[in-house]
Length: 615
Image (tube, rainbow, N blue to C red; front, side, top):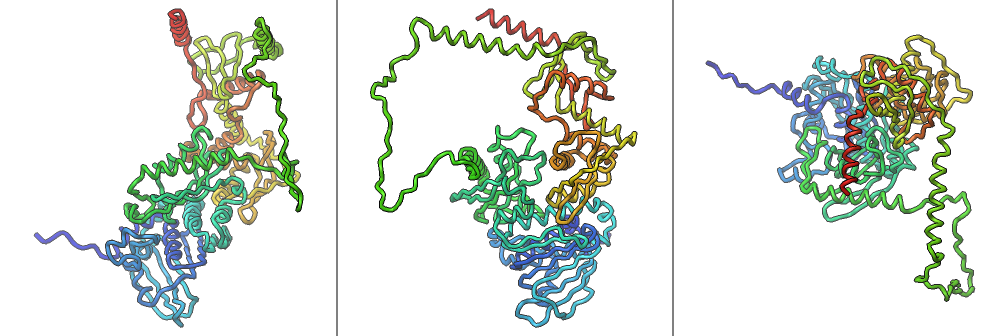
């Protein structure tokens, strides 16, 4: 029997490596931009067509390569950054394994033009399926110019499973931003289908963050900085009141390398505890600097999962650093110089004598002497005041109408029936309480309104009774590129719901029309909330994209928690909820109604009475 174990051909081995390193077009952008930064480039341009399917071009002003280096860089495990095993524990550059270019060349058509500053001529190389088609001298600028064409052209299965262009391009934006946020001293541009998405000049870190995420984030940032013998921490965190429903603007970097670390993430969220609701996410841009020997970046092909030698100590340092920064932000008041100052600072003129400030003192004051009236008059006065205010508590109830007659309840609510006479009470600004024959009904007010609005939006779509009201003065809104691309993808579906959106340059939109069937006090703010809700809504909850949009709109326009509702508003919400086809659950399956059985309430009250009697 002949031997059956054979060495894989290089082309197949490279395709297998590409399966780990090059997962989608964004992976190519990541690897090439990181290599450009490692080459010492002060400017990097990324040009993309069809979300990377057709073309990914990365141009840098780095050191360039010699003819032999230009050929060698496409071989597996060929790298300029590792010479001996000890170098693995002192890595500060991005790419170091020598797998990226070999993997890209295995699944795409690659062209490279590169020249060193000291050379008269550069080198041009063409590679397909890991094979060099052409190598020749060429006149070109110093630096490197990579063109990656027809990604996965020879791996149809991989190309087939790529997502839509909008989704793939959002991944490219994410990778581009991660590199941009760690290299604020490098000018970077991103162009997609001949449209400039980013043009980031060299700047400081705060300016770079504002350039990436828009000018609105500028007022949101709190600086953090801590230096210890174990790790140095710097960067910015977001103010609690600017927290979002999505966790997109959250970044950890170690030695200028993006990383994902759920353990450190919990330290950040712990520091924000009791400052933001549990379903909100703060922004943060946290940069860790530590000895490369104390971390291991070689545990994952994409090098985003990094192992730390002393995670527990760093966790504590991150927690304390953020807690201290939030404390300073909350304690130190802001000064508004447009208002009259709350205090006057005297200006001392030249030659003027310094006068000691005068202090008025009462020499007869005795802190141990009580000024309360004798004979219990003080306590009697307090008691009378208390009784007066207790009486005032019932004044508002006299004007509330009583509920007469029974309200119709559809079949979905099988657990209880509404009593002939009910009252509504709001609890903690979150729940509406009312009695039913089987116990106490608890309604989540926000989810109830979401259910109502969702069915109203779907009704508008199904009946095509669309009323769009043109805005007299179109309102403009600047978004970050990711949100802009998201809105561009669903703009036509929004039009079915009455929103007319114009897409302008530089990630700016124009609100030209709003739905006439709903009252929108601040359309721009509603669009921002809608985008956040859309990103958090699972794309799998329904096959129809327009229903996902309707749900996201319902989430963004529904009444919020802590909103105080009058009796009539609670009654109206109740009636509209039980007119829905399924009042028990929201469109994405969250529970709206819960009933506490009468037996359970009686049992608790009996236990309470028993414990009181025992005392």
